[in-house]
Image (cartoon, rainbow, N blue to C red; front, side, top):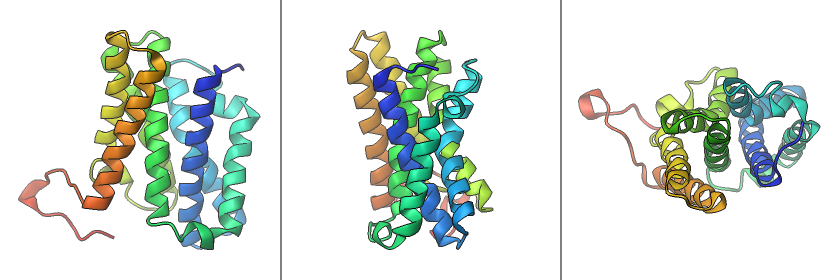
Length: 210
């Protein structure tokens, strides 16, 4: 299966970022090496598999191209044996998750447009691509998925994908709208983490942050 180089680079970068977030969470949950690698692979590829399946690109590139498996396993091994260094970063799970979220949201939207989906479908598929890895990662360790308990998670992915679609409608170069969408998504998610931005909830109060 062939993949355009710019999309491949963004995909592999997102795969690496999500894989580190999954592996770091696996280490925190005291999983063994196999468990960490499984969690790393699931977090890294779930969004891309969902994206490709929904646009009819089968088999999904994450399963057809050995580089995706290699990148996710490499990230898992590095995290497992160097977890103390990874943990020195502030909120490493959420930080790498934000990178993966942004990259998969924009590649998902771009692939959807290339497959002939309309603007609304492309935006929704971009969001789904972004949040898929985090959902798979959290469910495998029996946690409520981040999309349901973290502020500006799916919203950030949705806006990043919308930026790509808007750029396409306005005739922007694909690279410009992709970069703008990724930066917007990451910035929103990162600022939400740092400043505690929250969406409204019933009663106006949230459970304590973990």
